[in-house]
Structure formats: structure tokens, C-alpha cells
Length: 433
Ligand code: DLL
Image (cartoon, rainbow, N blue to C red; front, side, top):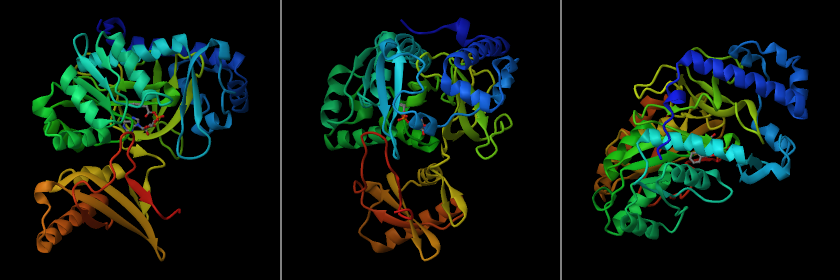
């Protein structure tokens, strides 16, 4: 029941690229002929499908942005009729109209295959109990992982989010071996378990976390693995691509993007040019096989780099490195670019610091002011002001070194910052309020 397709997953890179070229060419012809949206876009750029003569010609095609989906709310951009659709998902987003994604049966099959391959690459399969603690419903996380896990013959425990104490009881009673949720929810679950007198490391059979839907850092991975006694794997996707689709394999070194499904480019967000191999830029994906909502050169807004070398696991499909932040997540503090992930990375190296923090940005007069509220761990929290002052100054010093900008630190009691069941919200930017 595992989903291991060596003919595709280990296909020599040159053959994979040839396959991608053929898929791209037929996609472009199809959209030029049948989609008014893409037809007009290509015409505007003076592009005809005959201009696509090799894979690199993808660079001639126009980009697509989230606003294109919003502007065509709810389904004007779909290339399948409502009768052909078998499901909708809707993502709310923080601004403006939501985006709606429709799926044909083939689209759902492809999505499930992508996750089945991914879960297999982690080493999961028949005999595993996968607790799906992503939200079920309009969000893609719950149902996406649900069907992927069923496809590989694992037993699904569809807990969705919330009701955390019950989740922990079920994890113990039914022997969950893997959990899929946001890293912040797993941190919260670990704390709730401790309050219940349960050690996830010692008292459960959990061995893997499939964690994503929000940015997290390598140091957070190490903390989670050490604390909970599991291997933590990154999982990535966005609702527009289908939902969660790609995970790291057992090598834990970037998530494999299946080349027969998606063509990945990393571009300079300012110029739109492709960056040099291995350089950081904006992840841009063309979904090669989707019926209801194909996407050409979709600018996702996530910042990362890509490694096209063959993976030690044998898979030839490129690995995209951990997402470092979003183009629109970047804070500019007194002219210096700061990503929340840099703050997390710096904090997680400091032993006194717990897992939770919050960044508050204000404008004082003409100047930006950044405050980082940091929870200490229980052992380091003390009543002695002098001890706390030393820790606070130490953290401020480390943040200054990591970020090149001054940040004030406020130490707060363990357990006092907000906890999240879904995606966390670590930045409070009060400059725009
Ligand atoms: O978050 C789909 C998903 C569900 C992914 C479950 C993984 C697991 P959206 O709500 O559309 O879809 O949000 C997509 O979330 O563009 C990233 O900014 C962020 N994101 C998702 N996964 C990761 C990750 C789902 N592993 C947006 N690391 C994306 C960093 C992530 N950011």
C-alpha cells in the first residue's frame, strides 16, 4: 500500500525535464484555446503556444498572482464546469475576498497521490496510525492529509483541531505513531500533555510529526524532536496548488516537489528574473496537471531556495528548502529587513528561552520600534530581578547580532503568550493600525 513509484520518483533528471516540457506545452495549448483568462493574458504578452519550444520557454509566460484569483471570485477562472467539480475548498486570507479552489475527481486523485508519495518518503505506511490534527473543512490541511494517509494504508485518526486533552487521550489509547498539525499546535499539545501528567516522549508511540502550514525554523525542529522524542518533517503547500502536497523525505533536507505535477522556479521578486541555482528568491509554481484550476507561473510569495541535485534518498525531483518567510511578511525596521523566522532562529539557540515569542512593532515619532516578548522556560524564570536583567540583556545582544537592528526584549512568564491551534500569529505590527 506504500506509494513508491521509482519509475517516476527516480527518473533521470533529463527525462523528467522532457516530461515537464511535454506537459507544459499541452497545458499552454489547452489554456490558450479554452480559458479566456489565459488567452487574454498570453495575447497581452504577445505569446503564442508555438513559442514554447523548450522547457526554459516557461519564462516567456506571464506570471499569475493571488489577486488574479481574488479578482475572479468565486470561479470565473475555473477551466471545468460546476458539474465536473467534486469539491470546493476556500481559503480566507487576511485581506480582501477569499479564494475558492475547485477540484475535479482527477484533481483530487493527483493531490492524494502527491501526499501518498510524500508520506511514504517519510517512512509511513500500513500499520501506522496518523492523527490528523489540521482543521477539517474549508481549510485543505485536514481532508488533504486524510486521503493521503488512507491511500498508503495507514489508519487515520481524524481529530481535526481543538479539544486538545481528548486528542492526547486518543493519541495514547489508539497508539498514534504520527501526527499532522501546525508546529505551533504541536507545541501547545506538548504543554497540555505535560499538564495532564503525560510525556509525549515516554507515554505515547508517536514517532513522526508532519508539520507545516506556517513557517518554522531548523532550530525549532531540533527542539521539538528533542522534547517530544519524534522526527519532525516539514510539509508544504498552498490552497491554490490543491493544499498540502510536498514533504521532506527521511533525509529531512527540503521538501520534494514532484516534477510530474509541478514545475518550480525561484525568481527575484523585484525583477521577475530567475535567480542563480541555489540562490534565494520567490517560489513560483506551474501546476502541470490540474483540470479545474491550472496555474501558470503562480507567484506564491514564499521566500526560499531550490536544490536540483539528486537526493541521497534516490529521488530525482528537486528539493525546496524550508520557507524563510513571505515577501509580504518581511518587516522593515529602520530600513533593515527582518523576517520573523530570523527572530525565531536566534531565540531558539538560547537555552533559557521557551518556545513562544511575539514581535510587536510600533512607530515612536519617526522611528520604528521593535519589541520582542519572550517566554522563558520554567526552569529559568526567577523572581530575582538581577537574574532576569542578565537574561534580558543577553537576549537583546543576540538579537542585535542576528538582525543588525536593536530590539527591546520583554521577558514574560511561561504560558502567558497566546497559543494557537491552527496557524500562529507572531507579529503585531501596530504601525499600520
Ligand atoms: O497552509 C496548506 C497546508 C496545509 C500546508 C497543511 C501544509 C500543511 P494556505 O492556507 O493556502 O494553505 O496557506 C499557504 O502557508 O504560501 C506559506 O506562506 C504558508 N506555509 C504553508 N506550509 C508552510 C511551511 C496551507 N511548511 C501558505 N513552511 C503558504 C512555511 C508554510 N510556510
